[in-house]
Image (cartoon, rainbow, N blue to C red; front, top):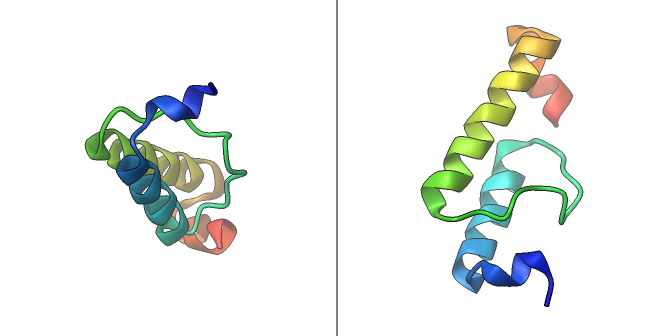
Length: 65
């Protein structure tokens, strides 16, 4: 049993959908084991802020394709 098996199927689907919608490219299986939909949303927000801080506000969306 892998660590991602502890997440419900509904949460896996939600996480994958939100990650895809965010435009942030991530290798499947290289993100946290999420505990809730709110945890997914917080992670996405944190990643978007990190990209914006690192690449600059105007470049965040271009870099994240």
